[in-house]
Image (cartoon, helix red, strand yellow):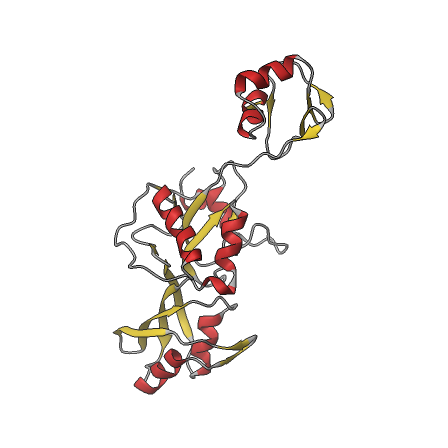
Amino acid sequence: MERLQKVIAKAGIASRRHAEEMILDGRVQVNGKIVTELGTKVDPEKDYVKVNGKRIQIEPHKIYLLLNKPRGYITSVHDPEGRPTVMDFVRDIKERVYPVGRLDYDSEGLLLLTNDGDLAGALMHPSSGVEKTYWVKIKGHLTEEKIKKLAQGGLSLPGGKSAPARVRPLRKTSEHDWIEIIIHEGKRRQIRMMVEKIGHDVLKLKRVAYGFLALGDLLPGDYRRLTPAEVKGLKGLIHKGGAAKKAPVKPKGEAVRGKRAGGG
């Protein structure tokens, strides 16, 4: 909730002092009623404010969050089946935010949330070309030929063939391979389907970077706010066609414990 004169000033209608005069003169309405009390508080996202008979457009405070999504959560604001969603971890954020893109229920890792619709839409558009980096645990062992198939693209997927990707081995165990895959597409369950196409199952999938943003040591269920420089960098990716930059080892910004992760 904010003071009415502050909301009017933030909308660019008048200075705060002039807004106070307009309120006292009876030129301001809130939800259809004239308001003349300077101490009146309104919710910019819910209340209808009119000045001189015209509704003002209130730009909400922009929020940009980087969350480490755990497995077992839906990347959605609401789930009709009642399953837990990523919104459980940002309940202390007053502004309404929503996920940028998605991570599957069984996937984990870096997920952006914001209320900046223009930026979110641009980042999710296929033309953005923003690179996403994943670490993938695969059942069995991959041959050089299969790694090449993943990298060169052309695998038949619902919605079209896969584009070329950057693939490199990370480590091996007696029964599994870990690889890194970097793609710029965003087809649903794309990594899993690509791996299935070459005859293997994905046992674990974790997104560790989005463009130049790295997950770093953020714990599952925790989030942090992006710095102004990072927000500027994201907007720059859109104009540069998603060209990736080297991700920082230790991203800046204070981590916040998610609600489900024990943070209150």
